[in-house]
Image (cartoon, rainbow, N blue to C red; front, side, top):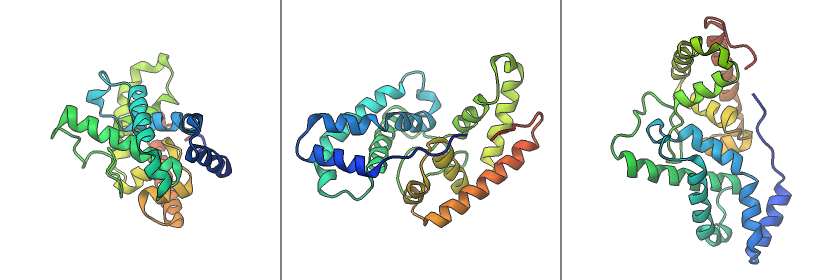
Length: 216
């Protein structure tokens, strides 16, 4: 898996200053820098029952309009780093979509990755498993994919909820150490220890799977 993406804080600050004085291009540039990361988040957390009806790009576009409408409020009182605020707005859009389309038929939280601190949708273990398996399975191996997917999902579900969430944040959403700590409401040291422990346990479980999954 790749390392968490890095961003240039000075460039973000410069573009926020441009946005503050009314430069219309600044917001588009700021949002575009994080579009791929936000799309990845949507794909992990959009309920599987909605994936055939709702495209992640549409969710991101709706979130951009919401960000534009709330930008002045953020600039007056930026309680979160820019990317984490964008992530929160996108998450709120997902919550609204889930409520609108699913109502009380939301995911069973016992089976999925729980989010701590922020009321964002859960990242499904099925989505996490599919992301992992997609890196190790070619189309010619489709006959064994279904069985391995189930085993991998079971392995992810066996992790503690917060450990699964750390993996989702660091390994799939590619948040860095500081961002992960803020998202979870813990210290950076605690988040780092959780990540190392969760990754080791998942690797150990994958090594025991038939055929294994090397290279995580």
